[in-house]
Image (tube, rainbow, N blue to C red; front, side, top):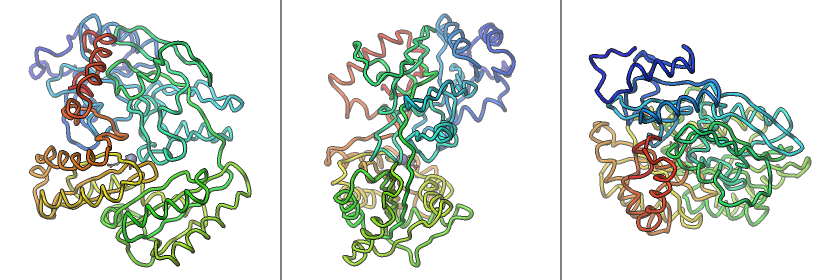
Length: 481
Ligand code: 2HG
Ligand code: ZN
C-alpha cells in the first residue's frame, strides 16, 4: 500500500483498492510507488503524475467489474496502453486521485481469418505483435508507427493513430470494423462485428476511435487486413528542399499512385541527431543533404516491377536535379536500416535535448510553404531555436518540432511551449490545416480546442461526453477543455 502520510484526501480509499484486488488478484494491481511511477509519467517526461494504483485486469469482464466499482465511488480512471502518448494522453494528474487502468494483460489474439481478412485482437496486444500475427497468415495489418513495438492496439485506436502508411491505407479509424468497449458505468458493449457493410444507425465504434479514453475503454477490436506485399522497393533520397521532395512525390503519384505505401520527409538536422545519438545508425548517401525523402513502393503482385520503376523515376529526378543523391535498399536488412533512420527521429531528438512538438497537418500541396513560413516564424520568435520538421509528407502530416537553442536551459525552453505552438498554429491556420494530425489532444492541447473547434462542434462533443460519461470519470482533463 502507498504511504498514507503522503496520500491526499481525494485518493481512492483502501476499501476500494481491496475490492479491486479481490477482482483482479495480486498480479492485477500495483500499489508500490516504485512500481506505479513509470506508468504515471509520459514518454516525453512532460508530466509527472501520481496514482494510488495501477490496475491490470486480465479479462474484459474483470476490467468491467473494476470500472463498475469506480463508477459507484466516483473514482476517476486513466486508461493506459503502451504509454507512448506524445500529448500526455495516458498520464494521471499529480494529486493521486486517479487510478490507472492498464490494458497490458488483455493481450490475446482472439481470431484471425485470412478469408475474411480480419484480425480480432484485445487492446493490450502491441501493434507489432498484431502485425506479426497478420503476416504469419500471409496478410498485412497496414498500420505502422514508430512506437509500434510498445504502443498497444487499444491506445492506437483510442487516439486514431496515423503513421507511415496513411497515404495508402488511411488512419487507424479506416481499419476498424468492430469494437468491444467498457463504458463508464461498467457496461460491456460487444460490437465485435466483422462486416464490411452494416448500416444500423449511428456508427458508435467511430465515436470511440479518437476519443482518447474519455468515453470508455476499448478492450478489443476487429481490424481490417490487406494482402501482404509480394514486392517492396525502398529508397532514401537527398533533396535540396521540401519543394523538391514534393516534386518527387508528385512524380511517383503521376507514375503509379497506387504503388506508394509511404512517402516521408526528414530534415538534415533531424537526421544528424539520429546519426549522432542512435547506435548503429549510418548514412548510406555520400554527402549530407538539407532534406531527405524516404519512399516506399509496395505491391501484392509478384513481379510488379517496382524496383525498375523506382530506378527509372529516380534517374530522371537526378537528371532534372530534383534529387541530389539516392540509395535504394538491396535487401530486407538494408530496407530496415533505411527505415530506422526515419523511425529513430523522435529518440534522436529526445537525446539531443528539450523539444516542443507540433503534430500538424496541411494539404499535401502546402507542406513546403508551411515549413518555410513556420520556420521563419519560430526563428523570429526565438533566435537560435532549431527547427526539426519531419513526418508523413505523403498525407500532409508534418511533425514540426523545435529543439532548444544550443546551450540554453531545457526547462526555460519548455516553459515557452505555448508561445511556440501558437506561432506554428497561426501558420497552420493560414493553410487550412489542423493543430492535431495523429497524436491527439491529450493533456497538452485541450486549451486549443475552443479556438479551433469552438461553437457548435465543441458544444456537441461536450454533450456527447456528458451523455456517455455523466460523472466525468473517464480520463478527466483530456481532450475537452
Ligand atoms: C513519428 O512519426 C511519430 O515518428 C513521432 O509520430 C513524431 O516525435 C514526433 O514528433
Ligand atoms: Zn508521425
